[in-house]
Length: 112
Length: 113
Image (cartoon, rainbow over all chains, first blue to last red; front, side, top):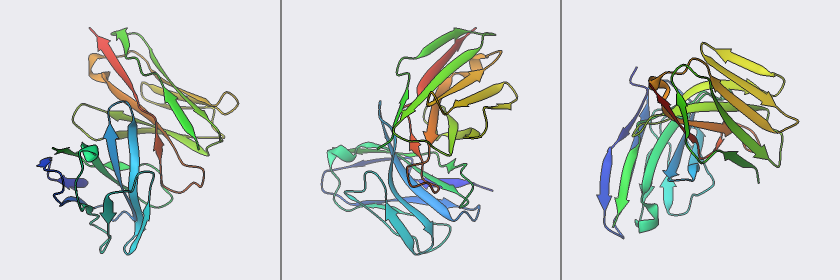
């Protein structure tokens, strides 16, 4: 099993550009989520999904969109990047009702 | 909303000693609490989960306690090794439960040989 994979590992964007961060898992987990991690602030939940076709907002959803068309994939879209979105982004997954979460390796995004 | 506090200062200890990390929370009573390890440039890795009705949980050299009266969890690593050096995060479910987690900012542990 590859576990949770994320692409790309690094990305530099200019303000106003759009991009999609990819996340995939091969463990058949129902629950998937996106976090951002900033120095001194810990991980903050952006969006999450409890199954294909179902998404909801987390703590810091503004500026981000998600969709979940399959169990395996949960892409995160930045429609118009802003310098405040410079961060490290982690995708995580778990079975519903089992609370241990599996994290991907992260994407380091810089917006100039 | 719930608040989670972990020591922002790094903990430096000598190899072989026991490392003790603290996680304090306010404003609610979670059904469980989790601890994760994060190495530089990598995603967090799950270590232990302790439920509200469990006072203590052990896994090899790791021990976690959960005091719901003090609203505090302690994370111990006995016989620490340089390879234990990492950031340790505590995480709790939000008020409405489910699979979501709220994370503390983490404590850096440095074990010196």
